[in-house]
Length: 283
Ligand SMILES: [Zn+2]
Image 1 (cartoon, rainbow, N blue to C red):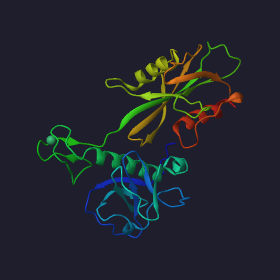
Image 2 (cartoon, helix red, strand yellow; image 1 turned 45 degrees about the vertical axis):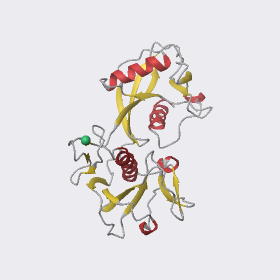
Image 3 (cartoon, rainbow, N blue to C red; image 1 turned 45 degrees about the horizontal axis):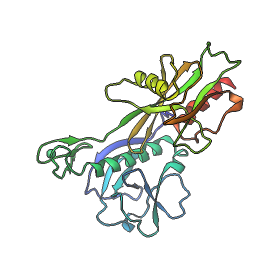
Image 4 (cartoon, rainbow, N blue to C red; image 1 turned 30 degrees about the vertical axis):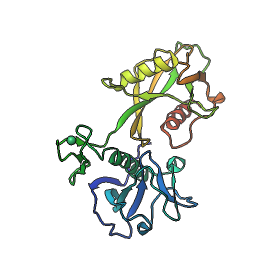
């Protein structure tokens, strides 16, 4: 998941920036993470090659460079219509195929588009805010309050059977969430509560969602997830016992052996990385 060869460099050069380079990347996003794509798009990176087809008041912000070329975000309102030849779409279907620099650029664009729109007014006094020219922040000219892009940590955990589980081979615990498609099972996951550390979140979520007590978690990897501004932190822990789904968020959970796996999340998700990582060690 983490690739040290990432060729994306985040920068911040706000509005009134002209798109001067032919080799620029232009990403158009709106709150919620949708991106603008040409009709019939079959590529893997939603770069708009003709910015002149976009409404004149959609102004670009340079948010980074990709292989040395500028990356611009055009942040559109949530009810923005589709310009001719383009359509709004979720980036989820093609995110899994992106190499890491493009993935980071797309996640940054989606997250900043949501933040930019959601902080047009000061949360303290209601005055219209301004973009800071020097750093990614929206500032209130009346009271001085500054709003920075929000990143909300969440954890996801691979729960593996321990020596007391009594199975005749390795097992992984997977759960079916009410929001999943009918047959899909995945790792337990949840948001970090205010005041918690990550280890505490992992153990609390396991207890709440499947009723088990797990060992101290070990960090594995992470993934930005721009729906709308999460950072998923992946862990592994060990447990035993019969899972008891909470019946609210989780409707079923069970221990699965490598040769009896249910439908699992698609490639490109951190859940799949965690599950595949386990399968590689036991098959
Ligand atoms: Zn204010």
